[in-house]
Length: 116
Length: 112
Image (cartoon, rainbow over all chains, first blue to last red):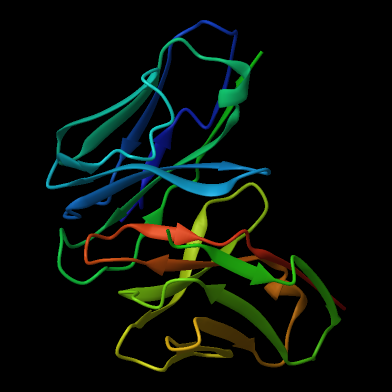
């Protein structure tokens, strides 16, 4: 299995531009998570999906952030418009089971976003 | 609100030493606790998962313990090696939804 796949690995953009991050979870996994990691705040959960349905988006910082999961094999995290304070590493993770006992989460390599 | 704290923030030890990393959490009503490893510029790799009903889990040279009543977990690494150098993160699962709350991590350096 290829593991969780994220693209792009690096993104540099200018303030005000739209940014779209992409994630392909491990095949057969039912839960998908988006995290953001910064030096100041550490690793924070932004949103997670069970069976393609958003369950908890309380970690999404502002309305500028949105996430979708149109099918079981693809998810996007969009920032529009982007700001310099959005600069961080964004991780996607997936786990096998939706609901029930928490299962091991498998992380992708992350997307390093720099907003100038 | 659940808060997870890891102490120390950084640790440097000579190769071969046994060491303990600490994790504490404020709300003892957890579903489980996981330890992850993160190498520089990489994603997280799950090391051990302890369900709330368990007291410890072991994998090779790693042993993780859980004491819910005191809000603590420890990760014990035996006979440390330079390849163990990484950041170790503790994460608490609150509820049966998969949501994890992470500590800030302990950065470990094992010197040859």
